[in-house]
Image 1 (cartoon, rainbow, N blue to C red):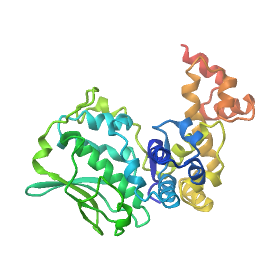
Image 2: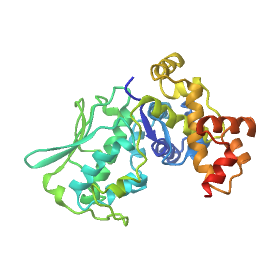
Image 3: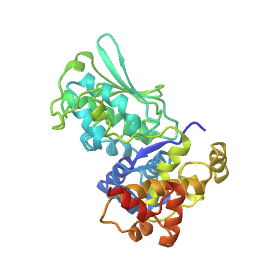
Image 4: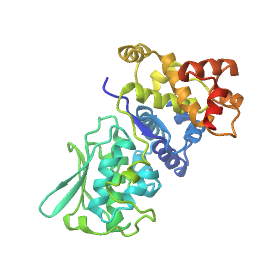
Length: 334
C-alpha cells in the first residue's frame, strides 16, 4: 500500500449543504459513511477525513435522493471558502498563476487530486485526471471547481463553450440549466474545461484581501501537509476521531481507511509498529499542545484524550517522553 487517501472535511460538508439546499436530509447518509454531522463539526472544515468515505457519501447521496447533478451544486461553494488553499488561489495576480497555485496545492485538499493545465494554439484546458466509473459526482464536483477558478478572471457570469466529461451518462446533467446548450463531449479520458488562451494573463476580478506570493515559504508553511506514508496517514485519521474524546477501534479506522482489519495490521507490522502504539503516539501528539496551555489541567487533558484515569495518562506520557506530566509542565515554564 503506497498511501491512504485523505481529504478535508469541508468537501463532505459541501455535499451536505447542497443536500440541505435541495430539501434533503444529509444526516442519515453521512451516518452511513461514518461521517456524522457532529463529527464533521468537531474537527472543523480543515479537519482530515477519509477520501474514500467522503466519495462514498457523495455518490450514495446523489442516487438515493435522485439529485443526479449533486456534485455540480456541491462544487458551487466559493473557492475563497477553502481555507488557506482558497486564499492562496484567490490571491494570485492573474489566472495563470491561480491555476498553477491550484494545481500545486490541491493535493493538500485531497491527497489523490490530479489537476493540470494544457495549452493549445488559441485555447487552454484546465483538466482533472481520470476518475473511476463509480465516482461521477466527484467528476461533476471537480468540473464546477475548475469553472469557478476560471471565473475568477472571466467573471461570475462566464460559461465554458466546450467541456469534456469522462461520464458517458448525459442524464447526470440533463436538467441542469447552467450546462444546458453547452458543447459537452462525453466518454472523454479526462475531465476538462476549455477557455481562451489569452485569458491566462488576465488579472483576477476580485482578488483576496490576503496577500500571497507564489513560492513564498512563509505562506506555504500555513498549509497543513498531508502525509504520504500510510502510518502517518492513519495517525491523521485517528487524531480526527480522537477529538471526540473517544479511542477509535482498529475496526473503525480500518473501515474508514477502506481496508480490512487484517490488511491494516499487516501495513503496521511491515513498519514495525502496532495499532496500540499508533494510538499512544497520536495521544501524545494531541497532548503536547494541550500541556502548553495553562487553561487545561492535567486531569482535563487526560479526560479529553480518552484515558480511563489520570494515572493511565501519566504512565503513558512518561513512557513516551521520559517525564511525568507535572514535571514536563514545570520545565515548560523555565
